[in-house]
Length: 96
Image (cartoon, rainbow, N blue to C red; front, side, top):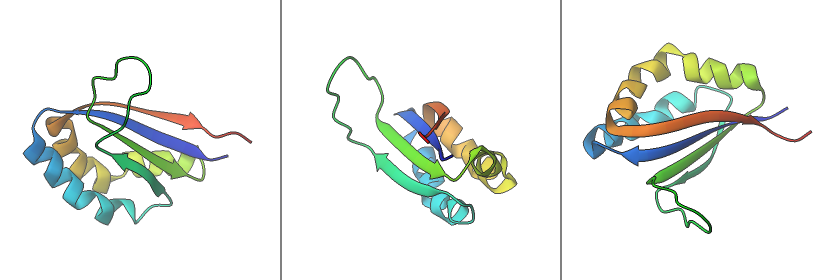
């Protein structure tokens, strides 16, 4: 069953986030994921959404999502993401 990592970001130090973003695909492409959405201008249809960007990644299963998230390569670059953006990051399971 597909698993999706969703990140909702509020930029706090854009230069650091941009450095993370410049290295992200080099790391991400080594794993079994697909980048589905990386939108810095989402349109809010209802409610309040005090964020700047949404990212959605698809993985074939929970193990693949965790392999990416916990990899030493991702952990190394994620330092800049954590310093450059306040993030809410979670996984959701796809429908069967």
